[in-house]
Length: 301
Picture 1: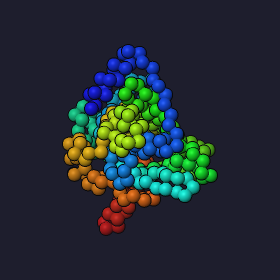
Picture 2: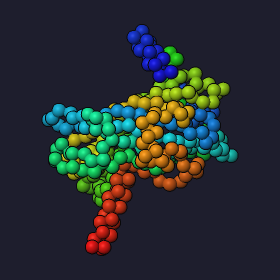
Picture 3: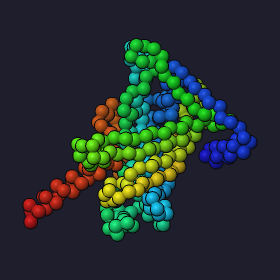
Picture 4: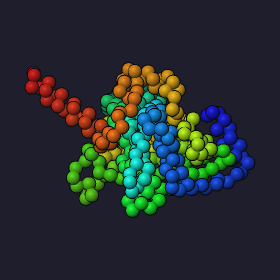
């Protein structure tokens, strides 16, 4: 399937076919959004997403450096809801991991030598639980007007959704005066996802067999890198797939889940209302846990 999609995309672009912008509305838009989010119109059916890629540095006045490789996994499931005014809707619950790898050996690393400071630092891998949909997506607004819309670009048989997500929010590791002295977290994520257009838009087709992922992220240094206020950014670029079949999860990810993150083999229960975790909130807890451990050890001494 993946090879077929790639070859078809190549053919389309070589032939110079322009995209056809398509927008669905109402219940069809709701269905498309749910398929985009969970690959299925069925409630409680897990979707498995996997990706792999590279991370580079960008510092003014020096060549970009290939710092790390990555491999990641997200698991999620959708919940179908209905409101007397807003009509049908859905939300989702999920969690994800992403491992940082040596750029030469492609093996998982738990320590990293900072090439600018020469310091050996502990690597804090991504383990975000939960990563939930922040609000329910409904077909209608609070007055009962049908407002749901969903758009994609169509290239032949391929449907492409493209989303740029600017991030600018209070950094959990900084103080209360970021508006005045800086420190606000600033990044952008870009998602381009490729589907079979018929599967994506046909209401009679309940499941999407596979989508292909392209993900990029431009952000500040990762907190565990201990870069302080040094100028620069990191750029991540990765590709992968999303599927509904558990036995299609990559063997390497299965091994990581078995050895390090067994609870991530399944999504949490529907209805999870916990606030979402990010790399920054997880790192803050990591620092606090280590500080408490050192205090306990000091007391014992």
